[in-house]
Length: 345
Image 1 (cartoon, rainbow, N blue to C red):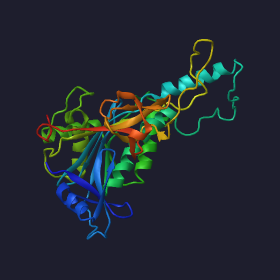
Image 2: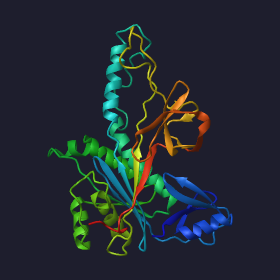
Image 3: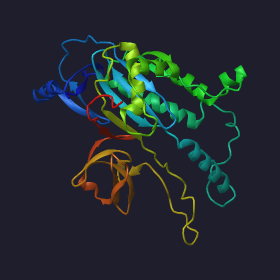
Image 4: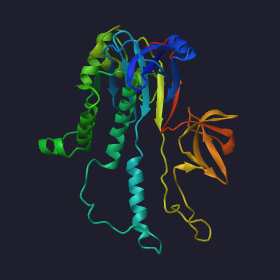
């Protein structure tokens, strides 16, 4: 398959995508400069674009508790299918931080004094904000690569109690969803569809969805995001691109006063941080031996490197001189191509 390559102008404004062979020709003639953005190969024009006309491009968003799907589609072509893991560790991290801070106040160790002026909740809770902000981050990233005209989101609902005021104002899901829609509307037009409407579209097009929610397949979540985008722009009734780009948000351990448990002798060693010998953790680097990977922690003057596909540690003894910085990143990413490049339904 000939992949579509996102194109931006000198100022970073998105234009209509082009074919891979044409983008390569532009790069060879110095008409454009290539760059990578979270695993997507793009080009930036060095000359004035010949035209700025755009076609309607929709992004279908299928939210989920474990995984979420995004599809970028026009009437003629499916540009990109993104599958990402949801952020589900913030609530536990905040709970641990609160408990350890309480414990420190009973020891002779530096600690933050209690603040009684922040007892009133301001804005969204951290876990709710993290979940919905991930969707917004990906939507903003896609808006920088494609001239998006519409977002179509499958509307999810919280379990109701029958009390209208409580359901509308105090459900964290409803509050987070309202915040997300408000922010998303600043990027493009936003429309929503209920779950039963999405299923009706699937049945109308003869597409099937697998029951395995964690399967790394187009039919797990992206089939829904595809039909949502199709409902806005139309086009072929069968997916023309079943390839997936996996985006997995990285979990960083922020700097703490010390480790939670003391080591031998009652000594508590320092723990956490987001820098590793000059590299920001999560940064994409190229190693002389291990090729493309991302930066983890550091110890005794050496850096640990991790696999983009699995997240597992490749080594702990990488020298700083053997690394070439590629880009900053808060995600690990990898691609998975479908066998027939279509819906595996």
